[in-house]
Amino acid sequence: MTQHIGIVGCSAEGATLCYRTICQEAAVLMGEAHAHPEVSLHTPSLAAYVACLDAGDLEGVARLMLGSAEKLARIGADFLICPDNTIHQAMALVGPRSPLPWLHIAEVVAEEAEARGFRRLAVTGTRWLVESDLYPAALAARGLTCLRPDEAGRAAIHRVIMEDLVPGSYGADALGVFQGVLAQLKAAGAQAAILGCTEIPLIVNDANSPLPTLDSTRLLARAALRRAIGELAGPR
Image 1 (tube, one colour):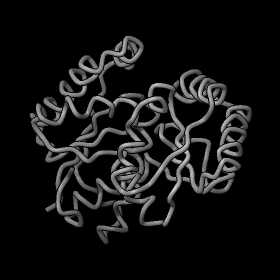
Image 2: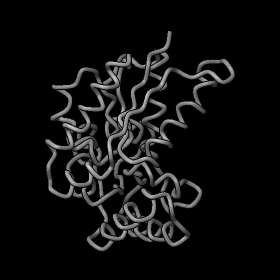
Image 3: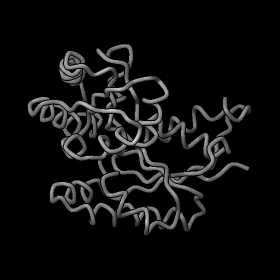
Image 4: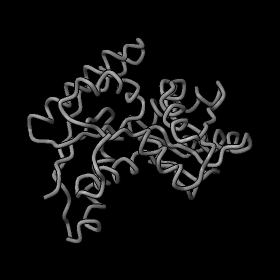
């Protein structure tokens, strides 16, 4: 039997891409057309998360995540994932109080970076994420290092994410912002780019990026699939 995946959502676009990836890619792993593990998703209002992030209130973020975790546990989820990099900053507060174990998005991405031989990674995402220690810590645990966009790059990417990608309304100029920032980070020595916001893969991929990409959304979804069908020893 497969395990029941619980998705703790934050933004609709990122959660949707994660959910869709699980359901679309499961059949190949499970060897049966249309098959996928049981999946449940809970998402509080994004406005509640943004208010906590703007206030630097990680305890508030943790309470929102735990509220979702408790609801998902009550309906039978076996383990949890969160397709949002930024709110993983609260995971140290969430883990000890959670009713269920989690897969950690930054650890999943760092594992993939190491497996592919990348040693120096560009980190992109919201300002909250890029200025945090989430990815530097996860990468350092594997002997990897990271580069972050400069102040102008952080501001530009944050604006595109929050004003264009999160609402699901974006044009070619949004991609151009990412391409410019990633080109700068490549020139500074980055070997690959972490798409550290789960909406970024909506517009950035290996075909249009100056750097090879690590798609945090799909990597997390695939790790959850492997766990659900018994290919991983257990969630972190």
